[in-house]
Amino acid sequence: ESLLPSLPLPSSASVLDVGCGVGTYVRLLGGLGHRAVGLDYSQASLERALASDPGRKGSYLTGEAYALPFPGESFHLVVSIGVLQVLESPERALNEMVRVLKPGGFLVTEMLNNRSAATRLQRNLDLVIEKSRAVIKEAAEIFWASLIIFKKVGRDRVAVIGRQDDFGVRG
Image: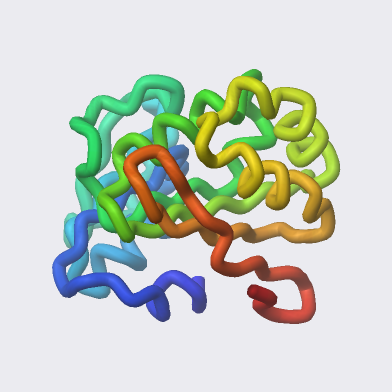
């Protein structure tokens, strides 16, 4: 939670939380003045998110990480906390997150089961965005990292700009 407010985002940035659950990050980012959208496949989670957000700091919708219902380059920030490790094809979801990210935008992901998610990403590198292969490979090899911060540096290219483990941010 302390990392997200420190990212150099424009005021009223458009932000997307993929797999928002009960909307914790939507409320945090919306409370900072950003246009926050939470997306989750679970209607029950979205109902809890709405109940937890009486001031409507964000908007919420049902959707899948594999086919985000937004045009390309729509968001300054995409957050996905604790989602990749439960997906059958995390690389497909990453591709979608990069697609909707504006140039220079940030993608913040967290993997709760790092070794498992990193192993799956490594095994499936051939399906990840071709131009970002080395960067995603680097991220997949960082099995100790629970939080990986990417910045979009080209149409289909991202770069790792930081990692956070139990000892703080490395980058």
